[in-house]
Length: 530
Length: 49
Image (cartoon, rainbow over all chains, first blue to last red; front, side, top):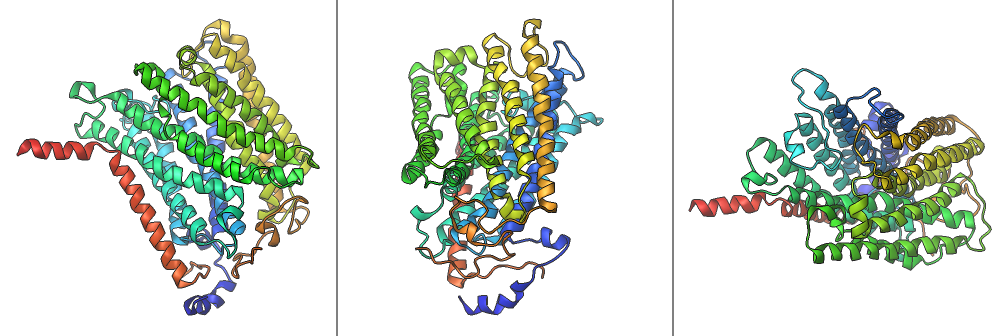
């Protein structure tokens, strides 16, 4: 350690208190906590909008919203959940765990880490403003484009679209900065002896995800910048009358949008690769093939974006390429699922809450993947396109694939973070209520879509009434079930049984060598890895 | 000063900044590559000649 570092050491025995601790924080655990609290807040905001959507769809006809407001809520629901909840939650867990898992004292660029987080509240404010601005005099029309923001509609809507564009810029900057930090931390800050192939899969998953983010987030930033120019500076990037092409935006959007799915899912897969071996009491089956599969998913995921655009009129050769590429992704995804099942095989399995969520993710995400293969097939997709089948598909991918993975991670590491065990009984009740109501909410939507109910439309034909009623009632139960999650978290933060250093019998990894909760500064002396 | 940075040696700190900067430049390059605006700007300049 250098002289500078040694001289600074006495300063590290204490940490700042009060609001300064959080506002000026450069500590990975504090920033991780901030990310997680932010994500939880946005998760409830996004959940509220989802419940408004399901309440509106409880019966045919208009209940409480008008079509524009419905689409505004729908747009905000997607953007809040993706950019505000799931991505920051993943970043929060990464901040907390990566330095602990690789034996690093902190993230590589701690001040940048602070900046990455504190951009988020400003972005969230922009996002929320995009929702409420139209309600004020002169606020213009509502954002009714859906999260895809396709022109020409997105060029025509009022100033709320500008708030949305700036929100996406800020969220993108925050994500890219956080990704840079994660990559540098993993490359430069590993403890001696912690080679890349000794590193926990969770860190690998974030390493791959961070590269994906750097490669695709600037593309959507470019896309919305051009949108801004078309709206205000007389350019015609997406205006056919001026020589532009609205389809260009779709390509730019989905070049980001499809890898975004893997950005949301890979960290959850990484968390599962920690949870499943711990509760199966066996090492992960196929470490290298899991890492290889994640790399293949990321690579293939970047070159198949136009499967979201089959109906725009591409040539047969082009759509065939995108179809084959998309179906190929099921191979590495299937390999990871196989590795998880092989890890469970003949393991001494127990089903504490993290393992329940992990098992649910393996089963339900596979189901979502299956309907993904259906959607990848061109002639089938032309039928399913823009129907509720697509809504059912991506909720089966993202709720089990991302959110259940995050729940598994939160329950797995919560005792490490808080120093207290959570209420296992309540957590199991939460899992069962959540999982059952999720399935009743989204499973019928497959049939609604196959029967012809379009998505993003406030009203529907009476023939769809029963399934929508069922979906809405279950959806409201699903939404309210998260209050129990909140209660469990608050209860664990406030107290409970003291957690041991190694909380779970079968858990392995450096994080379990530290006390629960870990000291403010951990791994000031790098651990030795055999 | 209220920020407390966990110590790392100077060589690691320098290496962190170098790799971080490199990745930052890469991200900006990706952003610029996605904006045909620049292409149109050059085209407009050429047309004007």
